[in-house]
Length: 104
Image (cartoon, rainbow, N blue to C red):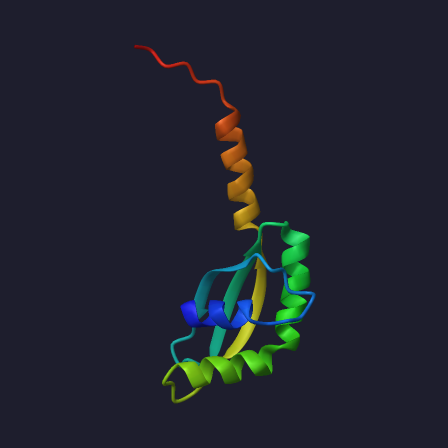
């Protein structure tokens, strides 16, 4: 997951958001398929646009991950947009906006 994040952050595609994060990685048992959930602070639409950029760069990403890790086989990546960072940010704003009095 860390190596994948480093590779993604190094991509120069303008469709890929600069503040994109890998939220979750699910690798199949035979290591042939890997689902990668990505999220962006700019919202779900920006994450979906980033997924399109990541899909077009899948070959490069596979080659880079394969060269960084000692794997016998590099999985095929499927990128999925997720809005968990945006959702967490909204929850944080709501919590900070609460006026909670402290009893002493």
